[in-house]
Image 1 (cartoon, one colour):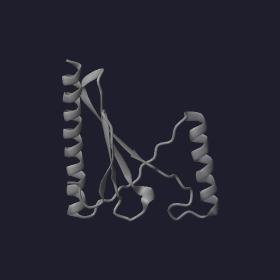
Image 2: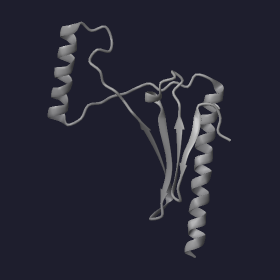
Image 3: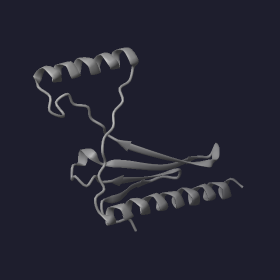
Length: 124
């Protein structure tokens, strides 16, 4: 059974989704975990993490001019390189949430293994 700050969202024949809440309390920081498989690649289980990541020129102790420069330099990097690297924290502050996260990983893995076996048995 999934516990605190971890919720099972959707189940499909080839995937299952979980949402893990950030301990800061903001819904904007939640992460979604997808377990899936592809019958054409039977030996692999796909594990995808989805999370919104934000970039803001006013983060940190920047004055107005350094915020403008940060925007310009970030825009130029995106324009000329085609990408910008970002990172964001995800907080899990208590043992129940960590245990729920681990349980979601284990449950998702078992779910996908079971679904793969069912599809293999139905194909035979």
